[in-house]
Structures are given as C-alpha cells and as structure tokens.
Image (cartoon, rainbow, N blue to C red; front, side, top):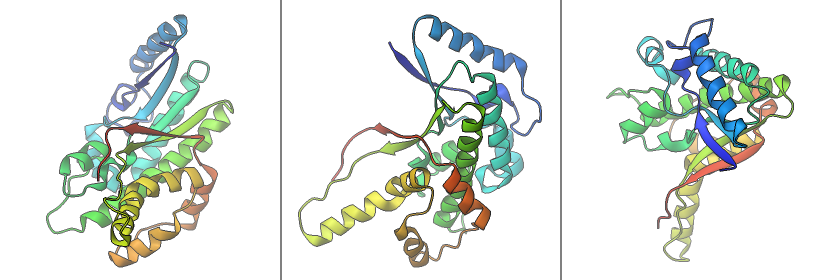
Amino acid sequence: FKCFRTSIAWTRIFPKGDETEPNEEGLKFYDDLFDEMLKHGIEPVVTLSHFEMPYHLVTEYGGWRSRKLVDFFVRFAVTCFKRYKDKVKFWMTFNEINNQREVNVPFTAFTNSGILYKADEDKKAVMYQVAHHEFVASAKAVKMGHEINPDFKIGNMIAMMPVYPLTPNPKDMLLYQKNWREMQYYCGDVQVRGAYPYYAEKFWKEHNISLEISDEDDQILKEGTVDFFSLSYYRSEE
C-alpha cells in the first residue's frame, strides 16, 4: 500500500465536541497510527468527519442545525492540522456530504449531520440549511489549514451514484440533469467553485426554501475552496 484513507474520530479529540481543550490521549493515538504508516512508506489520507460526530452535539445543540457547530468543527480541524502538520498532507473535511439528500431516509441525516427531523417541518429546508453550515465550516477549515501548512491538500468527498437517462427523450434528459444537480453537482460546485451554482436559487424558490446566508458566509466560501474533488463510487442507475 502506498496510501491509506482513514479518519480521525472527533470524539477521540473532543469527546463532547464543545470542549476548549483537546484530549491528549486521543491525539497520541493518531500520532502512533501516522508514525507507523509513514514508517512503512504509506501516505495517510485523512477524513476529519466521517459519520462520528460527538453525540453530545446532537442532544445539546441539535446537530448541524446549530451554527455553533461551525466553530466546534473548525476548532477540531485546526487542532488536527497543527498536531499532524508534518505527518499528514492529504485531508478531506466531510465524508459524503451529499449523502443526506434523501430526506425520507432518516438514517443518512442522522449519520451525516446529527439531524432528527420533526414530523411537521420542511425536511428539505432543514437539510439545505444544515449543508450550508457544513459548507461554511469546511471552507473555514480549508482556509486555516492552508495557513498552518501551505503544502496541505484539502479536499471534499461526494457519494457518487451516476444516473443515466433511460432514453434521449428531452423529458428523460431533463430528469437526468435535475437528479445530478440535486446535492451532487450542488455540493461539488459550492466546495470547488466557492459559490452556490446558478440553479440553486431557482431550486430554493420552487420549494419555498429560505436559507440564512450572510455576506460573510459568501466570502468564506470563496476563500475556502477545496484543492481536490474526491468521490465514493458505488453503482450506476437509470
């Protein structure tokens, strides 16, 4: 093996997620892991958040519904960047950030973002606001990571299940395009290009979605674009 993708469990570093000081024992665990990998010539490729956010952040703050998690995540990311800046070069912020797009599958919203949907709320509106908080957190982490070590390569991660049109019929082609845009191109555009794609506002308007996005958020997204685009390929669909 020349490289190995792994993740850092947020709970090993900040067990509750909102502490101000990290857990030294947890940091040492990954020192040992990365040292062993490097000893054997294996390049670590590290995901910061891979479906293991501290449960305390769910019960106390409602998961990524709360903007407070942006600062908690950035503190976690910066702690890891500083500690392993000479051991890890390749990073990813959120694993499969688009995996929560299926709002009728509660499992993905919970594992991705600690979200428990309420029966009477607009699930799509919640999901897109949650994703925005994660985009901002990712961009802040990318920007600060580059300040800590300019040689860092920090990317995103998309769950990729390509959909192909059944026929060349324009209706099939439009449906195919719509499917690709919803949270696959959408997430990639925001993290790679640093701004919401042109079709996002039309989509929000059609679904009566109003997001809390500040001018500062727009600037952060521009300044914190990822260095590479990565994906998990599962299968193709029609």
